[in-house]
Image (cartoon, rainbow, N blue to C red; front, side, top):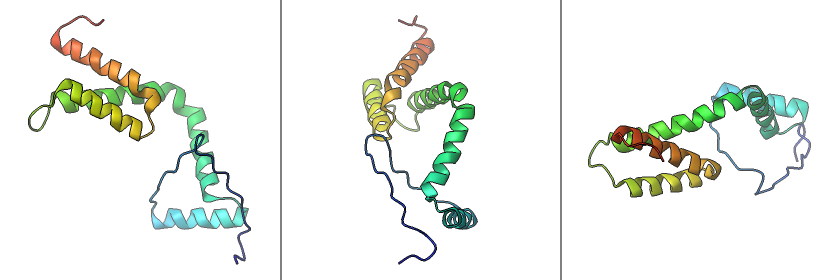
Length: 128
């Protein structure tokens, strides 16, 4: 039976939330635990509040930049392989599956379109 920490009811909704594993430096984890116990809140709610604050202040201008960055890195991976280059269709299918598995399904079409545009530019073809 916990002495300092009261039972906190956690909401679990699979559609509106996702579990993220997190490894933190020991000092940060200890401070997070101290704060959690001291204020009677979950560690998740503390981290969530910090992330929501960050999102409100920065996400609009950087969300598109992050999508573009992922598309550019992905295209570079395909166009500059370490060994034999994979088929373009296979590359796009693998990337789509990887993005979906990481919970980024809402960005798949945009990323793949950006990659197609980059490939067209490299080949000297006009974009559709």
